[in-house]
Image 1 (tube, helix red, strand yellow):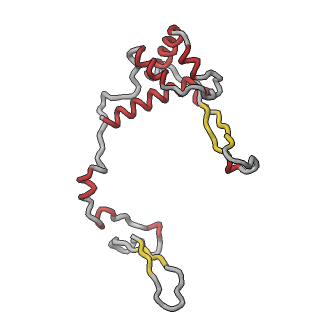
Image 2 (cartoon, rainbow, N blue to C red):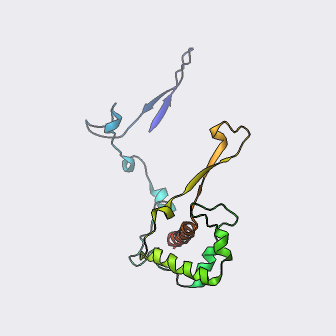
Image 3 (cartoon, one colour):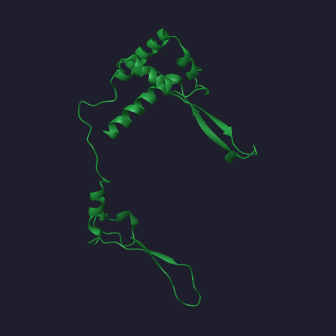
Length: 175
């Protein structure tokens, strides 16, 4: 716990800070911050946090996993439709629009590939996991580096797998 002490003399120097602790023993914080003892549970009542459920968590059952294959082609098509349109591709140079507008036979092959990756039958190449980082200019002066913002261009298959995994993690966390 830190406090601020104010001096009431006519000079009015800047406020000074001091650290208070509630530890017992000789090796406690004193003046050495490396020996600070955490007594978080002994200093304040946390019942209001427990009642609010702030620290509640759910253990994922042993049968639940995010590595299951996508069972239906319809579900896979929904994931493809969630991919961003008209965006620059990564190192693969394959835009997501190609996946969206591809014939069903091509999409079924990608479905099988993604399922193999999710199950673990196919290991991804390192090139698939690499992002191309480019800087986009956002303000007037091009000579100032702060006027740029970086974006990462991901390979299309990687984007698709991340959409699937994100959806599954969201479902696990909401259950």
